[in-house]
Image (cartoon, rainbow, N blue to C red; front, side, top):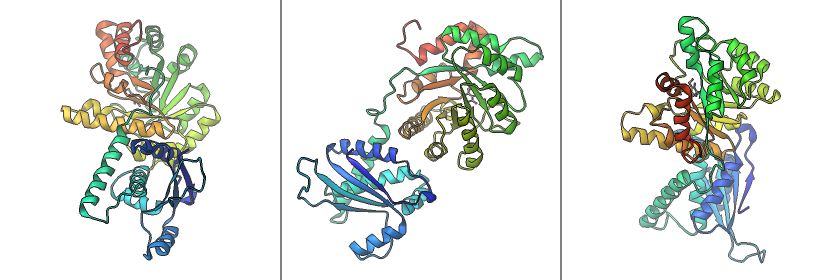
Length: 399
Ligand code: PXP
C-alpha cells in the first residue's frame, strides 16, 4: 500500500473513513505519475498540530496541513522511495469544510493534494507564479479525482427494480380489488425486472398490508420495502422480512416522496433502525440527496446501500441545469461507492432520463415506478417494462 495512515485523531470527535482516503491517495499518486512512491498521512487534532507547528516553524497555533519531505537517502534498499509525511489537523479541516459547505472528506482530500504537491517539490511561497501554478494543479487534480472512472467499474449490468405503488393507487381510486399489484409484480418479473419495490406508507394511500404479505410469498426476484423509520412499519418489516428496506422521509401531505433523508438530523433514529434490521439480516438503503455530507453520514451509521435521489435531475427544465444535477449524482455515486456503500438511484426517472443514469458505472440498481406504470396504460405492463429494460441494459440480449 503506497499510503500509510496514522490516525491519532480522537474517534469520539467523529470517524474518518480511512478507505476513502486510501483510495484517493492511491489514485492521486497515479495521477501525479508516481504510483510506486510511498507517503504517510498523519491525522491529528488542533492541539497536536499546534505543537508540531511550534516545534518546526516557530508558530504557536494549529494549521491545516504540514508536509515533511523524506530525506534523499533511502534507508530501505529495494523499497520504493518514500515521499515523506503529510500531517493534517482534522479539527481545522472540519471547520474549513463547514465554512465551504463541503464534506469533511472533500476537504481532507484537498489538503492531501496540497501536501503531496509540497512533497513533490512544489511551493506556493517562493513566487506568485508558482503559487498560481500550484493552485491550478490542485484544482485540476481534484477535478480528475471527482470524475475519474478508471477505478470505479461495476462488474455487472445495472438492475431494474420496479415500483408498483401506482398499480395500487388505481385500485384504491375505486376501493375495490383491481388492478392487483400482486399480479403486476409477476408480470414485471416475467418481463425481466430484477426487483419489486413497494412503499407501505403510514397513511396506506396505495399499498396495503395485504399486498406486502402476499408479495412476500410471490416475488421471485427481490422485494424492496420502502418505508419510514417509524415503529409500526418497522415491526411489520421485521415480521415479513423483505430482502431489503429503503428508508425514506414521509410527510402526510406530500404527493410522493419529496426529498432525501436528513441523515445527520435523524442519525439516532436511523442508526437504531439499521441496527435492528441488521440483527434480522435485512440490508438497509437510505434514500438521500446526492450530497457528500449525507453520504458520509450514511456510511458512518452502517447503511448497506444509499439510493440517490434523481428527482432534481429529472425535473430540470434546461439542459444546463440537467447537466449540473447529473454531475452531482455522478460525483455522489462515486463518493458513495468509494466509501464502501452500494449505490442505487431513483425517483422521477422516465424513458428520456434513465439511460444516462443507468450508464454510471457505480450504480447497481434503479428504482422506477410512475413512468413505467403510466406507459403500461397505453402499451401494457410487459411492453412498458421491456422498453425500460432496453434503456437500463442496452447491450443485454433479448431486450
Ligand atoms: N425511489 C424512492 C425512494 C421513491 O420514494 C420512489 C417513489 O415512490 C421511487 C424511487 C420511484 O419514483 P417514480 O415513481 O417517480 O419512478
